[in-house]
Amino acid sequence: MAPSQFTVLATLALLLPSIALATQHTVGDEQGWTINFDYKTWAESKVFRVGDSLLFKYTPPNHNVFRVNQTEFQQCIKPEANLALTTGNDVIELKSPGKKWYICGVGQHCSNLQQKLAITVLDASAPAPTPTTPSIPPPESSAFSIKLSSGPQIFVAAGLAAAVAMAVF
Image: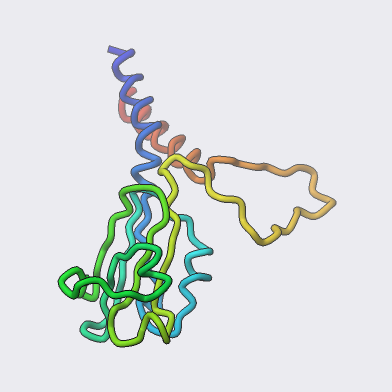
């Protein structure tokens, strides 16, 4: 019986961090999906992974969302109207890695008012990209420093493993 409990514990410790850490990104944060917002800078401050989702919040019919390809994104080409997402609370699941592009198809919102978003989705297990801005090193007087390569996943896995172990044993 103990080996099967260990197997359950090990499986939970490995799987739950990636499940628990899926993120729903509200596009534009508090501003939402709107005109005259710097979505390029917004996206650069995020890490998008397979399993995450995008939430486009806006007031219909003032805006909408189209999933587009790179050419349509660059030239603000609107797909057929029936392909628009129009609820004002549109959720798009990020199911595969790679580049993804989104535009607003209302008026000239994409071409003149920069209401468009390009992101890169990483595999769920890929490490976070290295920041492009230099980080501030710890003060010289530090006695030691700690570096974690897996971020919060280590703590989530350890916490879950401890909780399950306490419940099982």
